[in-house]
Length: 124
Image: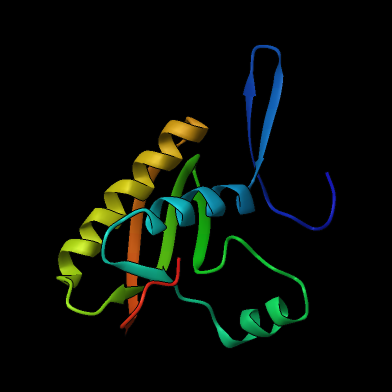
């Protein structure tokens, strides 16, 4: 299928469906960014350098793991200054799980939200 990407595969009556883990990560990241109180996704320094070199990754700040046909998502966010971070985290968990399940049809076992910092301005 190409380019050393990991795919989530499952069989249907008419053949197989293969979804790139990066696609699932983009779905999760987009859902997280829609939540009030999320200033942006947190990216590691290595990814920031890659983006400066023109290798933009829309799935930054999200890691997807597949085990026994269920998905676990790790989401790394920057929260907005003044928000209740526990409420933001819970809203991100719900939004990400709903987005992945409704878009892919796969079951989400868990969404782990890691709040890595606070930002005074929105980075959306």
